[in-house]
Image (cartoon, rainbow, N blue to C red; front, side, top):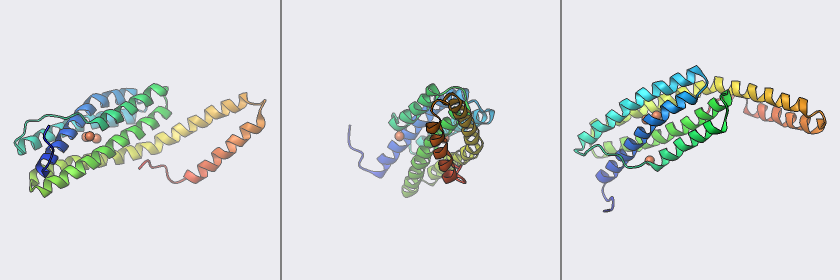
Length: 204
Ligand code: FE
Ligand code: FE
Ligand code: FE
């Protein structure tokens, strides 16, 4: 394969990467919606699936603008991020803890997209393709809004997950009456950790 030696070629590579990443997401998001237990989180994944379908179309418009055929090139990073979200699901039960993990995994996806679209938009501007830059920025803004929305959902979900974790620890401690010193040492460190994180319930 010839080397990528111009900004035009680099831009094309970036668009192909994003195109493949978005296509992978159109398959992953329905599974994430199904695995989520919170109705609000399910709805958020569902809504972002619809946006993602629109983002695929926007990328097809960008391919058209540069006179190239719409074709993806495997985005290894997105495959890895999706794999991590699948692992969260298999490692958890239906619970707020799973939702907290899914939100964290989904935000990693959004942050990857935000940096990919940010660079591609800037490169389109550099190449003087204002229409492509505008389309890419539109998607960039949707990804940022999604990240923000996930932050908001995390505030409730993280709290529920934390309460559930405390209930489970309380159950454990009741069973640990034979080792009271160890149990109280642990709950002591837990409340210390809590004080530290107070006021930082946002994920990003
Ligand atoms: Fe996207
Ligand atoms: Fe990629
Ligand atoms: Fe996204």
